[in-house]
Length: 60
Image 1 (tube, rainbow, N blue to C red):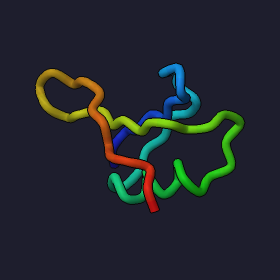
Image 2: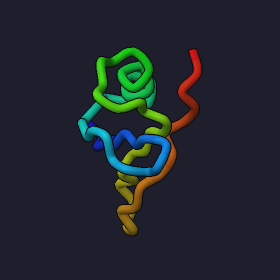
Image 3: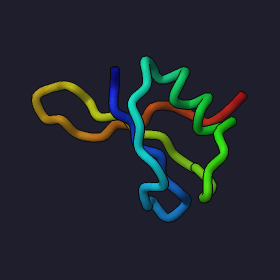
């Protein structure tokens, strides 16, 4: 499982969660019921620097 965070237009974290892959996280961001509008999805890179990376566009 990979950790993801979901950001609004201002870059504030709306929600966080663990997903099997980018496809599942992006689908949840598009189709989920959120209090805030999700504009960006990032995942925690498991590499040595452990930094957040862009997961991909929120397109159908």
